[in-house]
Image (cartoon, rainbow, N blue to C red; front, side):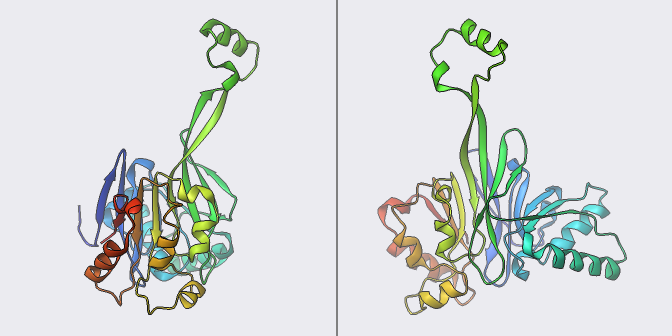
Amino acid sequence: MLENLPLLTLQHKALTIEGYSRAAVQTYWRIPELKLGFDLGASPWAFMGTGTYFISHSHLDHMAALPVLVARRKMMKMEPPTIYVPAEVVENVTRMLRAWQKLDRGRMLCELVGVSPGDEIELSREHVVTVFETTHTVPSVGFLVWDRRRKLKTEYQGLPQDQIRDIRLSGEDVSEEVRVPLVCYTGDTSPAGLDSDPAVYEAQVLITEMTFFRPEHRKEKIHKHGHTHLDDILERADRFQNELIILSHFSTRYHERQVKRAVEKRLPPQLQDRIHMWM
């Protein structure tokens, strides 16, 4: 593997979370087991094998490497990737890819899909992605990956197997779909994005931003520019039901040690064992 970009890895149960995020620098994530990634501020060589990406918004540090991934997969004779972006930016992203096609003299082949809050994307029999609203300075969305299974309906539980079989053979559906939020990715957002969907706080893994932490940085201004402060996380401490909360996208004006000390000092007991600082 070519180690040409910073890449951190964390294992949580059956999921591997890979990536890197620093405000105004680059943000990119991948979960190999789910065969998907979030944002493409850069594209590590290893990420080329993942063919489905969900882009939260169109800032350069989150989307600059989109044409890189598209071109590399074509060069390696892989299938064109499928890229989901906020619906409002599809036209301009298409123009960007056409411009790169002229510059690079190579076809930019991908399936570009615009999404809006409330949309649902079927990944496989086991997984589906839903889109929720976030708040940033450009059109932005967050994504929830759901694990889904078929489960025997409550009214049939406890019945003998032969009776359940007979009901099924009569044409009646004896099962129903049950969904569990597995991974949530917010991208860049003010706290309103966290609060826009209850499942954000219920997902097994939450990947979110915490760009600022210092008390002198005014939260009103931070929220206006579509970002989250440490205080916003702490104010919601009792709402997080997530098993793992990944905080990332720290401002470049901070040294990582400063962020780590500040967060560890102020974290309440109910969050201490569940928060991971992505640094």
